[in-house]
Image 1: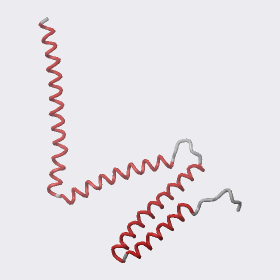
Image 2 (image 1 turned 90 degrees about the vertical axis):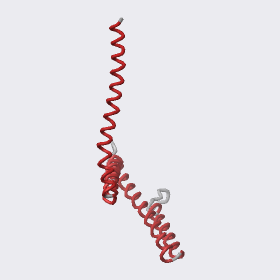
Image 3 (image 1 turned 180 degrees about the vertical axis):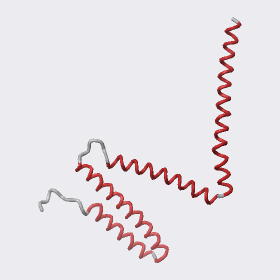
Image 4 (image 1 turned 90 degrees about the horizontal axis):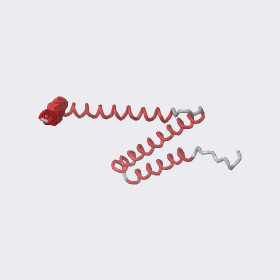
Length: 144
């Protein structure tokens, strides 16, 4: 009976010891990671900002490239489907660039030149987007 009591307390104390060891280990590893980053951020805030932005941009680029690769190379797709996916992908990029660039040009034109020039740019962007999005579709119901 005495042996079972000591064995029970031993298991309980071992569990508490493992918990405390894990707690201390997490604290030490956290300190070893955070302290140099904090010191870098305090001593060179500009360089730290650019380093963090570079790391984030690198991670985003890696994820984007992997996702694009998986989209453009589906399993079991034939050559025609791959060509359609590639064409659709680049058309989507062109649409995004036209919309984003048009918005930037619209804002610049409104702030620097005037509202009329800004709305001229906006109309031009809508027309170019319309040509890109809807102008190259073939209507199969009308014979050539």
